[in-house]
Image 1 (tube, rainbow over the protein chains, first blue to last red):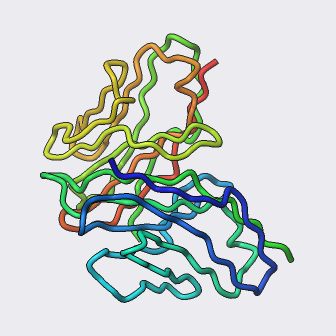
Image 2 (image 1 turned 90 degrees about the vertical axis):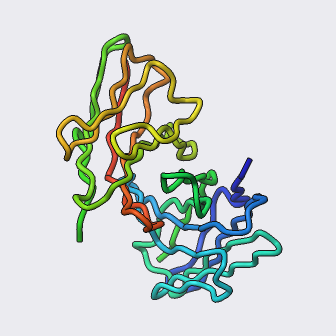
Image 3 (image 1 turned 180 degrees about the horizontal axis):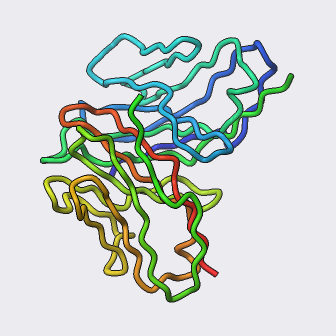
Length: 118
Length: 113
């Protein structure tokens, strides 16, 4: 079964600095999707960035970028120019690319709590 | 931007009572999901729903739970005979066919007392 591991329960970064959140996963599939979700204190799950496993190029969304290492099964999130509003719980998630007639379910890691210091 | 809407935002219920959590997915989405997050723990998959039937369910989704799409717009999760351990945040999500992105709702916090 697929698993997702986030080894950093908590991280802290100074405002305007850069921080990297780690995620590793285990799968026997060759094609899949990876996601980072942000969960602020409001508890809503907000999609930050996604990566298709067949794409070698790392995904980027404004200040957020990933380092996708398929062979190492690693998918880290880099947040540049950190802002106070980035403070939240960050979840890494995995999904198979093709799952019968449905989109398949997401498998989440336990999350990393990011604090941003002014 | 289209949203997934969940109601109520917070529900308090007595142990043993039945609750219905409601969700309005994005209108052109075809796949619907329920996830659960017990406080301080990771988000867990409950069930996926497509073409008016359950397409996948986790071991958490036992006979106590049911889902339905009664009117073509709402997507509901019913929990019969609630237990204290059902207290959690329940998230609804939807996705478009051939679109691997999910949109989550803002969740319903269920408290069983």
